[in-house]
Amino acid sequence: MATAAAAAANDHERTAMRRAIGLAALGLGSTSPNPVVGCVIVDASGETVGEGHHQRAGGPHAEVHALRAAGEKARGATALVTLEPCNHTGRTGPCAQALIDAGIARVVYAVGDPNPTATGGAQRLRTAGVDVVAGLLEAEAAAGNAAWLTSVRLGRPHVTWKYAASLDGRIAADDGSSRWITSGEARADVHRLRAECDAVVVGSGTQRADDPHLAVRGIEGAVQPLRVVVDTNGTAVRPGARVLDDAAPTLVAVAENVTAEGAAETVRLPRADGGLDIHALLGELHARGVRSVLLEGGPTLAGAFVAAGAVDRVVGYLAPVLLGAGPAALSGGGITTITEALRLDVSETVRIGPDLRVTATLVAKEH
Image (cartoon, rainbow, N blue to C red; front, side):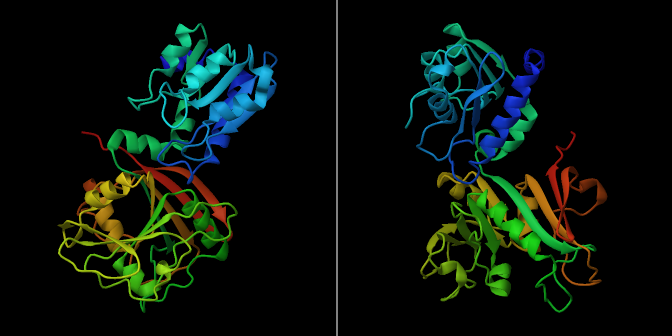
């Protein structure tokens, strides 16, 4: 249905939807537990008369921002929205009704709302006589909203595993030294990734070796993510650790039978396979409103996430450096033979200074 409906859209509507997708991305890292949404309103000639995006949870939705910008020009116009307008009253009113009240004549949206409490906006619009088209640039919009869609469909946050390695796959030299394999430009780009996520996660090994700070630096207006240290035995986060400063909130996850005392908030979770239960950890984060996780831990924690089937996207920074020995980026993961290899679909390769950033998503296994 979406393909046929989307074919009904014209060129200026496609252009406007691409703009709406770009606007939606401005909300990454600041709207959870809500989705990121962009809206562009165009008149009959294809001119933009209003646009907006959802900026923060509890604030006006994208459609409301765009309608306010359009004013009276919204009457008889077309609204391009990255997500089906909502049909429920929460902290804000239903966007479908706001569009109807403003006199919008046509609504084109990219992704249907899978949230059972909010769906039905399209039908409400049609009942009111509004022309509705679904599925325009659906894949692009869904990719931009992957975190929220994952949370609705799977009941856990979307996980991006980020690592930096030499061209031969080493994250450190044989003596353990790793500063710095990648360039300053690549490290600055990681702060962009952090700013787009709700939580940054590392394990005890990284905590002991690097004493990481994990907060966002150099990005104006960024909402600081929750810093999470998976410290199973409660021994890695010591007094004076950089994650204990007031730059961002911090959560230390320990095993249920561990007595941990410190300046950070602590959560106790079940053990599994020598560490913590990854699904329990993600469930705890989801309950706290976290919809996107940036996994920055070392090879052991990455392997635990991979083994749990809890990695959705991989972002690898590859430096034009050869180390020959040293730890690999991934340890374990439950992969013992080539037929168990996790196949990835590379969505982007970009030069970041002298380095290469490769972004890939997991390919669903065929059964």
